[in-house]
Length: 136
Length: 406
Image (tube, each protein chain N blue to C red):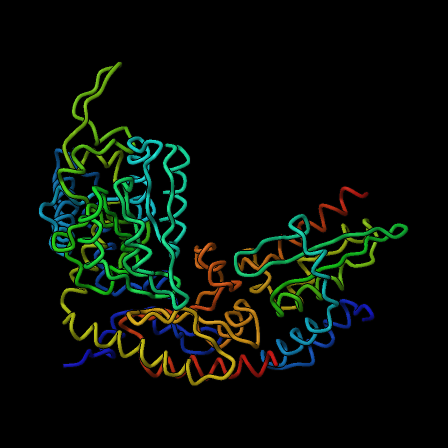
């Protein structure tokens, strides 16, 4: 699937006026995310949430970081697409510079991205940021 | 008579809340129950009027606080049918209560001894015994359940032998709602072993009717917050003769008799197992919760809980694409399920958006989830203030969830 940008997502979400449409959109994004092959879902790539699991794999191409992510829960997959829009195929510098908090707050989904939700999403963001910092 | 649920609901201020504009439907009672105004008032009144440390003050407030605190112990002793108030030990919750017993037991267990638990344990009654065994060289035996979530009684019986020194099991399973037939199991254990018997009552206590002397177990543990009381508070009940000889748990103030720089002697029960300043407001809140619950007709309460369980089960059985996890014949308070449409986390997420609070995940019972070959479940758990109408709301909301995930 071609990579969707953060701006496209924000524009799309603005279009919906009820939660069902917003979440249907996130669910649809989740369905389009390319699944990580079972063989790559190893403990080293696993970020265990208490409600759902997330996997993260990273490659480097020139100066860009290429991420593969997956989850066993569809809404988390959709939320991962939102995160990938910000981070995938970006340089370490771009990742570090990106205002993820501002983006989350614009998405108006903080409650579902909050650390207390235990869905592994915050942990993925922290992991990606740490990887980027290490790569500077 | 049937339970006046509207009158009960009116006593729980939080039930009037809205979540995203929807009336709150609180179906996470196995995690914690909500608190009636009587409990909130008792705690608030204590801090407003009587706050003081207990057992040591030479002033009016200390006397009042001590009277309330020790009066709470009497209330608990009476509620569970303890032979004496000294048998009621305050803890921070069920987990600490089990730890007191498991740590003490670890000092007594030897290689060749065994500890018996079941496949349906909450981590609190598994990790504790697993560690006690690892630390002592004893062996942990995990008695199997059947696929419907009932304990396999034949296998359990076969596991009872002279080597079993401890049996610890849940009264009611938190993840599945299975009620274990402890009234028949305990005599069976007594007949075949000399083991001490502990019942994890975290999920059993709120359903009423616990009489520890009739049960004839050695220990019964529960948490205040699962019976309409505050968090951070729990009870370890133990037979006096057993507790008197039990290795002290925490050491420090309150639990001693005499202290020199080099040595100490321990106080009497219950103090010897209660070091430090206790959770005074917690004990007072728990007593208020028990008094509040005791004013209800327990027969009516039981009937209402059974109605909720049956209603939920009927809806679930008729729901295409939903599978109940745990179909024990004797079950209370819990409907655990999975759906073809999505992961439990997705279900919980989309129910929350509709104002419905359930729990999803492994319910602190990872080995049980593996045993049942599910990645976790969605769990709706009921209490006395829930209504058949709320269960209908849950299933209507699940229809929407199913549509959205399709």
